[in-house]
Image (tube, rainbow, N blue to C red; front, side):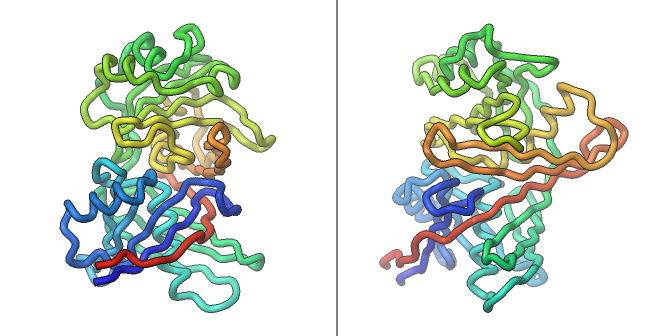
Length: 301
């Protein structure tokens, strides 16, 4: 059977910016192997498949694949898929709608809003809070793996850590923008770094950014997933408050940051991050961003 799909650019308001996502609107009857093959054919950072929810009070069950493996959770697929579902059912004009997506990591509630200008925004609440993990690599190993001098890694309490909010990342603070802009995966060093099993990628970051209101500038490398560099990584952003609070003191209350990514790839992206802090701990995380439709088509049966 033919299956409809569409692509969206996520974490941007401009087509051909942000992070491309393919959404297969009905994945019913496809095996895991078939889904993985389709995702490999699209060859985007992620492809999602919309399925009927296990609980009828929810809106959809969503499966998420990179070109090489399935993920239990990912940020730009959550934002893009929620917007795709809502836009397909919406009429003209502004709206706000709550959708509930079943992902392997758990139930992910998403608020989708279309504004007066026709821009559509989604914010999801993380099902799993960020937690530090054992197995962070040595500075020298990760520095070689991303072609950054070891002396440029770390600043003001920020150090290399392994954290997860459902998907594990190695967080690598880089002391200046110039060093971060020159970073790139060194595949030989990457393979010899002995990164922990299950680690999705390396999220390297520094303070500030290209845009004046940006708090953090990031880059994410995941060659083991078939993604040499990701233009915008919502699951890393969802984990990032754990790295921040492990590195510096945050007062209790709501904290907001804009995280920019993808500029070195010519795909500028803005991720809007919120964290609730109480008693010196992160108690809630929300990730938001815009998305715009790009293509529609059919997968031939």
